[in-house]
Length: 60
Image (cartoon, rainbow, N blue to C red):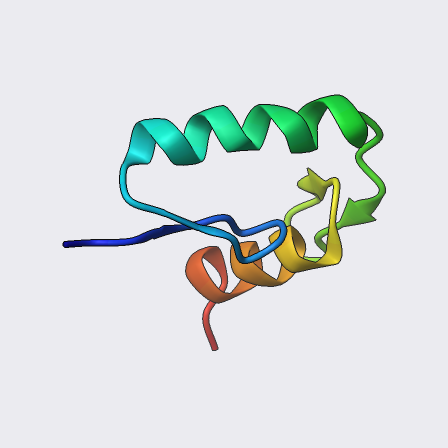
């Protein structure tokens, strides 16, 4: 069974739907986008999200 991991906190869920529902909690508790990607300017609520973005969008 595939697991879906939250990029913000690492929690794992059995379905994409469960992960998306969990993600609403992060959006509600951290609406300020404070971490900015130096390569493209995208902003993220957490450092973990920024790091995941860098690994997938700007791999070295």
